[in-house]
Image 1 (cartoon, rainbow, N blue to C red):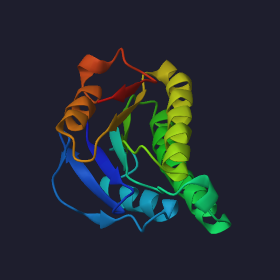
Image 2: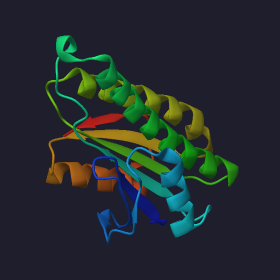
Image 3: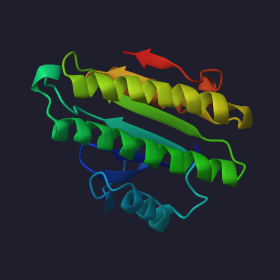
Image 4: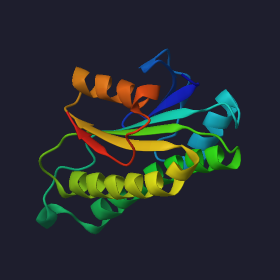
Length: 175
């Protein structure tokens, strides 16, 4: 497997991946600051070294629509923008280097909350679009939806990063 990173939007940490399991914490991504995150990735790995990325997204808001104020809505959209900016930067680096790669976005399964629903649907649409656009060059993009800390989620992610999953692109795996 090529080198890769795990980006955890919950903690703001970026870690190298060894197989799938993180080796150690190396850099704080600076919360939702996409530019600091991308700079951190480039500092750690160089522009052409990252072949796989796993993006982990936890709970972004469990309140109902009636409880959501303007600031809460802006926070949800900013979180989605941060994920989009990070993923797009990675995909563009692959395209620029004419390389194949793997993207897996892991979403925690949440049953309530407008923020979680917006994030899930936004990420699903984004990954399907990226899979269609970048799949022509061999880059594969998928989503895993699982319970927090689920071993099935880890195994599904590990499989989607493997060569054996080269036929799966733009898909959502519920485990």
